[in-house]
Image (cartoon, rainbow, N blue to C red; front, top):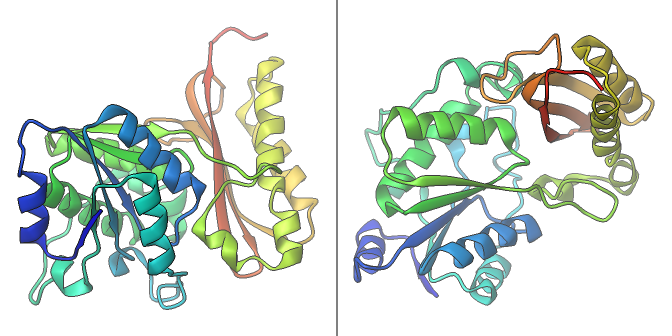
Length: 284
């Protein structure tokens, strides 16, 4: 595995053989099995696999956890090497945001609800850094996890709107045995909060099961999810949503491609989870 923080060196490796296809797995490091599942998917579909590790300051608000975001580069390097990554990009802040940097990328409407309602600057940071990574790497395919569902919707829109010559591949959420979605932020959870956190998936799954049985009232389903999560004393709900999967506008009647999602605090740790649904317009 070649490791570099230099854009010129990265491009030299990436374009050494133009006949080879490349998949890219962008990360912020502190890797877990969810990240490695993206690498495995990239290896299956491409001749070469690239990855990046960059804790992007632009997507953190001043009140968020940039300074304490978990980091373990030596462990990450070994995991990616063992997983078969060919090229790893580990830039410093100045490489991504050089002196005088003043250009950002924004996706308007679908960045505003859900995560955007409480983290209004977050997605501009995500889209800016991912656009730069796409331009630096120029992969044939880029791999992201379903757990960050709004992020994938925003990035899909960006790829279409800005004519990026690549395919976005969204891979299923990888979960612990008790259903908790794998996330680097799970490391922040106390033992009690870790035991409580799977309530997110249980609540979303209960609503999905109700839809399977014919429930089509969005408000009833949102109340169901809220009640189940609120019954866990350590939880503090940020939002509960049942929305159109493409526009992220809240759905009154349940039909079509939908996203059931929630964000919940356990102490100071904020976790997100979601379940995508495809629902016919007919009940039952």
